[in-house]
Amino acid sequence: MRRRLLVVSAIAAVVGLAVGAVAGAGPLSKSSASVLPSSSCSPVFYKGSGSPQYLIASDLPLQGAGRAQPLSMVKAIQYVLEKQFKFKAGTFRVGYQSCDDATAQQGGWATEKCTSNARAYANDRSVLGVLGTFNSGCAKLEIPIMNRAPGGPVAMISSANTAVGLTHDAPWNDPGEPNIYYPTKVRNYARVAATDDFQGPFAADLLKAKKKTSVYILHDNQTFGKGVANGFRSRANKLNIDVKGFEPWDAKAASYEAIGERIKATGAQSIYFGGIVCNNGVKLLKDIYAVVGKGVLFVGPDGWTPFSATATAGAAAQGMFVSVAGLPLNQLGPTGKKFLVAFAKYQGKKGVDPYAVYAAQTAQIMLGAIAKSNGTRLSVVRNVFKTKVRGGIMGTFAFDKKGDICPTKIISFYVVKGTTGVYNFVVANKVTTGC
Image (cartoon, rainbow, N blue to C red; front, side):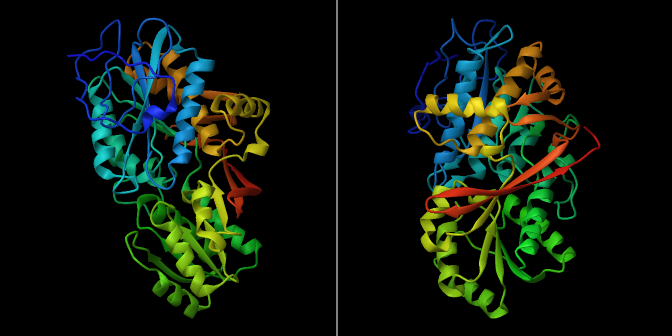
C-alpha cells in the first residue's frame, strides 16, 4: 500500500529519522511516486504542483565527525531541484529524498546501511537516479545491487568516490574489478571526481616538490584508503622516494603511539595518511604528532575533509596537506562563481563546501538525463553517459564509456590552517583518449 507523500522544506528533516515501513516495489503509478523508507531516508522534498511522479535520492553518511559536509551536499541538491529545475525534469515531476548510509555506532558509513539502502532504491521503481555514494566502500556494495534492479539498472552519479576499481583497471584492484560491479554488463555508474590513480600519485609529486626523500604510509584498510595509499606508493617508488613502511591503522584502537614510535625509528621525513577522518583520524593525528613532532610533513587525500573535523586534532593538523578530487572554488568559471553566490544565500551562510559544488553538478546532470529520458531507468542511464557539460558549475567535461570524468583530471591541494583548509595549488592531467 502506498504511503502519502510528506512535503518538506527544511534540511533538518534528514536528521532524527523515524522507523517506518519499506516502500513497495510494484509498478509506478502514473500520478505519484512511492516513498523510500523513513528508517534511512528523509521525507520527500517537493514543492511543485500535484505529486512527484519520480524520485531521485542521495546516499550520503549523515552521522559522524564529518556529517557537516554531506549535509551541505544535501542542501545543494535541494537548491538545484527547487531553484533551477522547479521540481521538473522535462515533463516529469520529480521529488527528492536524502538517505543516510551511516550509523551512530559506526560514526560513518556502514555496510548494512549501504546494502539495505541499495535494495530500497532498486525495488522502488519510482526511483530513477541516486546521487552518491560518498565513500567508495559503500559504492562497491550498492552498484551491483542497483545494476540488476527490477525495471533496469538505476543511474548513479558520485561526486566523491575515487576508488579506481569502481570503473577501471589498476594494479592494486581487487580480483574481478571493475566488471564484478556490473552483472548486467550495462554501466550505470559515473562520477565527477578524479580517481585515486591520479590523487595518490599527485600527492607523491607534492613530496618530491617539497624535497622530502622518505615517507611512511598509513591506511585505514578500507576500499578508498588502501587504494589511494597504493596509488601513492606506486608513484613514490618511481620518484625514488624511500617508502619506510606501509601499514593499516585500526579505527578502534585506543592509542596510536606505538605506530608513531615505529615511524620515528625509521627517520621518515613525511607521512601519508590514506583514509578518512571518520576512522578515528583525529586521535591518529594527535598520537603520531606527539611522538614524531612538528618536523614531519603530514599529507592525506580528500578523506581528511571536511577540514573542520580534521582541524580538531589541533597542532597535529596544522600545516597538513590535503588533496581534493576536483577544482578549487577560486578557480571555478563564471557559472560556478554565480552558483557560489546564489547557493550561499540559499543555505544561509557564506562559506560553501567544495563537495556541495560537486553535488550540485551531479544533481544537474541527473535531472538533465531524466528530462531527456522516456521515464525508464535504462533511458536515464544512457542519457547520463551521453552528457556533455559545457561551461557548467565545474566547467566543461563529459564521461567516458567507463563512467569517469574526462578529458581532464584535476586534483587540488589545501593546507589545514586554523579551522579550515586554505587552497594552495592545483594539478591537472589531460587525458586525450576515450572522451
